[in-house]
Length: 457
Image (cartoon, rainbow, N blue to C red):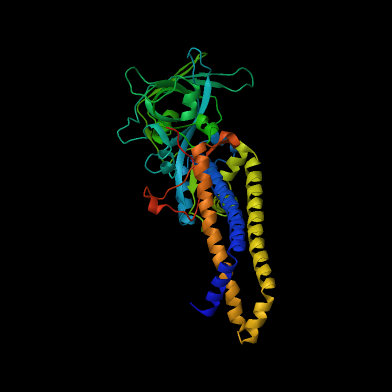
């Protein structure tokens, strides 16, 4: 220990009460900064992960589609496989997924229960980029398995009625209604939907009428069996978004090789029957793009726009939407306003913390003018005097930082014990708990306190 460090520690011991107050004030400022930063990170994580179940980092759709169409009314991309391949070739590190989507209606004929709607996302349980996120959110039942019965041959019934005059033709299809004894399609629904409708629950089979074309009046009625329920943290989205195997939706919508025969009866309509479909996995309604993780997450909105621009440069004639575009559509600009306000609050808190440390050090130097003069008279160099105050600042900052972390953990424990719950944008449930990196207390990371969502059992 050199002379500078000894003098610095001696000064701290001599005026320990004053320095103790200074350290506590700085620690409380640090606590506020850490809690604000933790809240912002958690809020962004929940909202981002929820919207990315639908859009991933970016979604590519037909030029005629808008943001509303991400809810299941996209026009088919017959060259979806080629689009996905070119994205991965032109943008190294980017991964793509082809999804099939539809809109559904259920609750028809259920006594005492209103008719409701949902958006069905056809996903590949083995290759979809967001599969891990969805599987981790299952709160009841199970996820898809290889043993699930997916494809089956049905005999559809389409009735096409010619509209009078210039009115468009109307096509009604009972389409893929399963034959007697045929197994229903497996499906995963949001837990919020089950809370609102008594007829929904794990193991229950329901009749689901869904669209089989993006912007046309053609429908299918199928039986589905609920095998699992998920909870993403945004109940509004959970109530609307259901997940089915992509190949199931391809069969229902006729995306593949169809063999069969049509019977046209003048003045009545057209009846169509076909054999089991050989699905084409290069056909879909939307191509989702997963971008590489950024070097930092300080500007997720800016990074989403950067990803969108890169994808658009490969396919300028197609529509590309980012997760942030979708978020603004479903929640408005409130999310961005809250984020900006939090960043501003964090910046002010950090500035106050720095200003407090600077004020303390300036005060110490002004009080020690005589001592500094005496040290200079005895031949002390500027470097030695500088080290004295540097060591004092380091000790004060280190102790205040440790106390700030401990205060943050204490606040989170107390809030978690009391049961803090906030209703946020689009019904997002914000709860508070501690995130452990390991069950072992000695492995608890106290260097970074975060908020996390507690799954309801």
